[in-house]
Every structure is written in C-alpha cells, then in structure tokens.
Length: 239
Length: 241
View 1 (cartoon, each protein chain N blue to C red):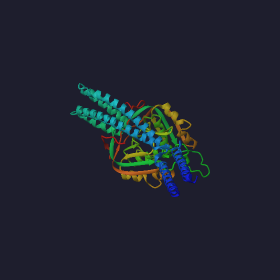
View 2: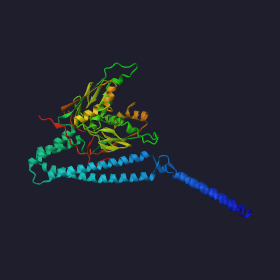
View 3: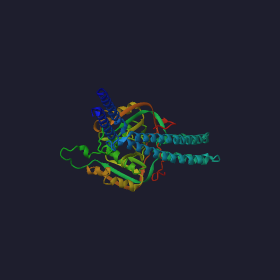
View 4: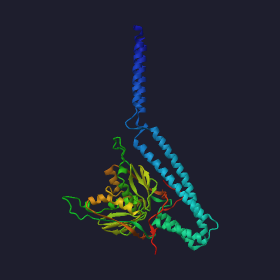
C-alpha cells in the first residue's frame, strides 16, 4: 500500500513537471509579437491599398488614351497632334521644358550674427541638409517644379555640400541659395513661414530666410541631356 | 483511518497540482501579456497583406497590358512617318525621365530597420520614422552617387516626391510607409556602395548614432516600379515663346 502511494506521488510530480514545461513553452516569445509589428503591418496594408486605388486611376487614364488612339478613322494630323501633346506633358514632368506659373521664391543665406562664445560656426552656415529639408517641405505642399540657383531639379538631382560650395546637377554654387518653386503659392508660402516649419528653425539659428510670393516664377529646363547609362525599361514592376 | 491515509494524500497532491496548472495557464493566457499581441493576430495581417499584394499584381498586369496595347497602336500608326516615329521614341525617353516607366538595371538594395531593442514604454516608437531626414539624406546621397532611379518601399522617387512625417507615419508620395525601409537604386553598384559606406558617412552615422540596422546588397539587376499616381500640373505651364 505504502509503495503504491510513493509511486503515485512520483508520477504526480513528473506529470506536474511536464505540465509546467508545456505551459512555459506556450509562454515562449515566439507566439507573441510587439504592437509595432502590428502597426507596421497595418500601415503597409493601408499603403498597398492606396497604391491599388491610384493604379485604378492610372488604368482609367490609359483607357481614355486608348479610346483616343484606337479610333481607326483617326487622321494623321490628329494623331500627330495627340502625340505631340502627350510628348509635351512628359517633357514637362521630366524637366525638359521651361516652365512658368505662380509660386514662391525662397532665399537662404548664412547668418551674419556674431557667434556666441565657443559656438560652432556651422550653426550659422547653410548646409545641404537644410536645403533638403526646405525643398522637402515645398514638395509636401504641392510644388510642381523647383529650381535652386537656376538649376531645375529633376528626378536625379543631387544637392551635395562640398566645402564652401554646394553641387546641384553636377554644377557648383555658393551662398546665397535661391529656391524657386511653381505651385499653389499661398499654400507653399504658408508652409514656409509656419512656426513649426524648418525655415522658422533656420531663422532661430540666425540664418537669413526670406520667402516671397510671386505671380510669375520662371523655372528653366534641365540643361543636361536625359541619357541613362544603367537603367532600361522593364516590363515587370518591382517592389 | 490508516487505510485511507494514502488516498487522502494522493487526493491532496492532485488538488495541489491542479491548482499549479491552473495558475500556470492563467499566467500564460493573461489578458495583457506585457503589451504583446498574439502571433495569430499578426498572421492574420500578414495573410491580408499577401492578398492585397496579389490583388495589386493583378491590376498592375492589367495596367501594363493596356500600356503595351497603346504603345503598339502608336508605333504602328507612326510607322512610315519620320516625325511621328521620332515622337514615339522621344515619348519613351521623357516618360523614363519623368519616372513613369518600370525600369531595371544594376544597382543596390538597401534595407534599413529599427534597432532590435526599442524604447518600449507602451508607446510605439520607430527611430527611422522619427528621423525621416535620414531617409532624405540617404536618397540625396544615392543621387550624388549617380543613381538614375530610386524607390523606397515601392514608391518611386521623382522630383515632386516628399518624405514627410504625417501623424505616426512617414508619407512618401502621399502613401503611408512603415519600416523596414527597402531602398532600391539603379546605378553603378560599386560607386553607390562606396559613397554610402564612406567613413563617417551616412551609413556609419545611422548605425552608430541611431543604432539602425543597415544592409547594403549590390545586385546585377534591380527592378524599380514606376511612379504610380496620375501626374497633373495645375500651376506650371510651359513658357510661351
């Protein structure tokens, strides 16, 4: 009898041990994820859905275009007129045509104030990162075409700080920096002078930052050719 | 009494073990396991994402087919007319410049992700999202290294592309994005890699100052999608001569 009790006791302990082990396994970190993962997934799903909506819009545009061209009775002159119109619009988007329209001009220059004791002189100098942030704000507020010191910004335009000068479209420029942007002038100007804007921060550091609204901003075309060495057209999209 | 002693003991033990088990299980399935979310829920989202991406593929194919059809029509109509033929050829060139064509070529693929150890105090916090100027700087460095086409998480970078913090997300081309950031660039892979990884350069800064993980892979063929919104300028007009 006593022997039986001992056996049962031992078995119970073993069973209890196994149960606790299995419960621990369930508690393993592999089965839980942080809220960040969920948030990121949700954002990515939302972004793909936005993409789908815009692709549907593109499909609509293509259908309309197709309808225009598909007409078998389309005359040669209409065809070439359509073609040149389409060509012009892509030249505009690509940066191959001089543009004009309402917009803003922004002048950024180094600060002229005296430095504080031991202050880093960089605080009153304009850097490429400053220009990037200001340009980014303009783009976020609907700028359609932008030039910096007369250089039209295209898809591949870099703004690179190199010593005393800044390189834009492989050409060198020095201060002051004159940014011109065509778009909704009021909206862009408001974003430039808003208290939380990057321009306000630059002013706080003592840099010169001036914004002017203009009815007629002229932006020259990209002066280099559009010759690509590495990229070729592909028929499948990548992600 | 002695006869039942063993049974009582066993009964007691069984009770105790039962109690331990129930405590174990209730801790495991606690309502709030340290702000964590069951994997099953995440898997649900992963499945949804997969489905949405498959849907996107399908409609992208439709779009590509339409474009191809349109192009064929233009080409066949333009045939024999030198001026029109030239225009059709130019059209492709400027479409490429505008960023509305899918492109491929040699280049690099960079993956930027948040540090593994995060500031976790109930708030979600993403280093790379709150320091989105790093992405801006990164793109600029890529252009400086001669990149011809760039995309971030499938968003083609064109002249008007903004990278801005909107609420809790970073919007690129108006589309919300989340880490990990996969940046693709077409250009000379060696030049681009060398520019990025220069000492005290942007990658080193991202790693040492922000503890981000940055992985650069050079590739013989990188595919970059087109800008997928309709472009329409309302303010900018061609200068009339």
